[in-house]
Length: 291
Ligand SMILES: [Zn+2]
Image (cartoon, rainbow, N blue to C red; front, side, top):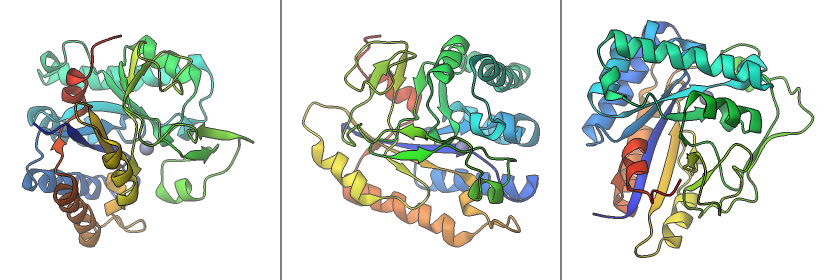
C-alpha cells in the first residue's frame, strides 16, 4: 500500500445552466471517475442550501452513497452574507437536516450512523464562529485550509456564476489568510479557535488541507508536497473541483474539452505520483487517532 494519498473532492456548486444540464455535468464526472477506477474513492461536498441537491438531483445523491464515495456538505456563508454564529448555525442546520432527512427517507441513513461528518466551507471561508457552528452540528472532518494562499472578503449576491465572478467586495480585510501555513503540511487536529495552528495534534476537528483548486491542477504544488514526503509518513494531495467548471457559463452546456482536462490530469497524477486514491472518511480512519 502506497502512503501517498490522493483525495479527489468535488464542491457541489452548480452555478451554470438548467437543472438537467447540471445533472448532466455531475453524471459526466461520475462516469469519468468510474472509468478511472475511482468509484468509492471520491468525496462530494454537496451544496444543499444553494442548489438543493436532494430535491433536484436525488438519484445522484443516492448513487454517491451507493458507490461508497464520501458524502459531505458544502455551505457558502458568503452567498448569504452570514457573519455571526446564530445565522451560521441556522444555515448549517438547514442543509444538514435536509440531507439527513433525505438519507432516512431513502433508507440510507444507516450508512451514516454518526451523521454526516465531513464539511467544507464555501470559498474556504474560515472564521471562529463558523467552526463553532459546525462543532455544534457535529462535523468532525473539515477541509478548508488552502496553504500559502489567501482570498479577499466578498459577498456573492446570488448563486450564479457571473455574480461569483463579479462579486461585490464588502469586507475591508481578508476572508481567508493561509499564507503562513506551509504547503507541505500534514493533516492536523484543532478546535474552534486554532485552525491555523497546524502543529496542533488534538481537538474536535480533523483538518485535511486543500492542495489545489479548480480543474487546472497545479502540478508544481503537487510536486512540492510529493517531494517532502518521507518514508512512514502519511502524505495527502487534495484536489478541489466544481461541476460548473465543466459547463458553459452562459448556456450551461457540458464542455467536453473541460472534462478532458480533468481526465488528463487524473492520468498525469497516476503517472507521476502513483498515489492511492481515497475518500475523506477512509482517509480519516487511517490517520493517527488522537483527538
Ligand atoms: Zn463552493
